[in-house]
Structures are given as structure tokens and as C-alpha cells.
Image (cartoon, rainbow, N blue to C red; front, side, top):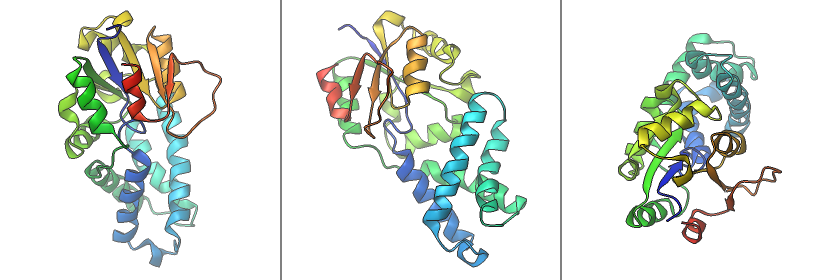
Length: 231
């Protein structure tokens, strides 16, 4: 086999972040009775939350803001869109979201099947994820896929984030893997593909959403089953 070590991303690649985060936010929306606070349309609220969450994650990845600020300010900014300036509520929602999110367990189709297939073929499977340590491990436990992976490298645990080369180097060291026998598999062009390429890795772009990009990964797939034709 050309590759021995397969490094997967988690969110948006295997674990369906969009579906799971929307379910968690719906629970929070209901439990805080936000309808009676003037937010009568959940989908509109979730759209605003998603926008601010994406922007704050970009700032976090660049080291502009810290974890705690990301966790509560995404709620604060979403609420402000509806003229609600309530920091205690924002902080409460932020904590509740981190508790609820990893209890959701929707995976992309064929996740268990492909991980079983790759394990049975003798590959060493690992994760490199920008998520928070406790949250990511809880996701793996609740979705019953943690046992597939030998090493789980998080941004929090490694003090680096994708696409920085340091987190990939750290993951290779943890796994005892050489660059030439390893490949990065993920959905995010910048974090997973460009990051992996800059670390010297071959890459597989998991293009669940049919995105158009000028970046040239080693392989592009549109469904996890297509990994069987590569690996």
C-alpha cells in the first residue's frame, strides 16, 4: 500500500456538523423560549448564528480571539441581530451549546462502513481536528466511531490549528508516521487540503457540497464510499 496512515478531519467530513449543530440550537432556542423574547423564526436565528460563528472561528484560527470569547460571543452577536443585548443569556447559551452539541450523532452516509473497510485493510486511522478537546472526544463517543482511531489530535491539545504546519507535524509525530506514507482526508480546502499540502501530505478533498475550487488536491471525492477506489 502506498499509504499506511490516514488522517481524517472530523466535522463536516465524517460528523455532520450542520445537521447536529442545528438540532442543538433548536433545543437551546426552545429551552430559553426565545420566541417570547421576540425571535419568532428559528431558521432566521440559526442563519445569523451560523454567520457569526463562521466569522469568529476564522478569527480564532488566526489567534485574534480566545476560546471563551468564541464560545459566548457567537451567541451574543446572533442575539444582537434581534435587538437582545443579554450577556448572561449569551454565556448560558454558549455553555449549553457545548454540552448539547456532542450528544448529537448524525454522521455522513457510509461513515461506519468506510471506517470499518479501511480498518480491515490494515490502515492506521487518525484524526486531526480544530475542535475543542472535550467536545470532540464526546462526539466520537456518542457517534460510536472513536474506536476506529489510534490518535486524535485536536487544536486545543496541540496548541495549533489547521492549516498551520505545526499541527500536522505534531500529528505525524504522535502517530509515528512518515509524510510519504500518510494522506490527509477532509472537507475544508484551506484547513485540510492547503494545510495538508503545506505539510507535504497527499490529500483527499471530501467535497460533500460540490464546491468549486482552483486548489488541486491529490484526489477529490463526493461520497465517502469513493474512498474504496483510492485506498
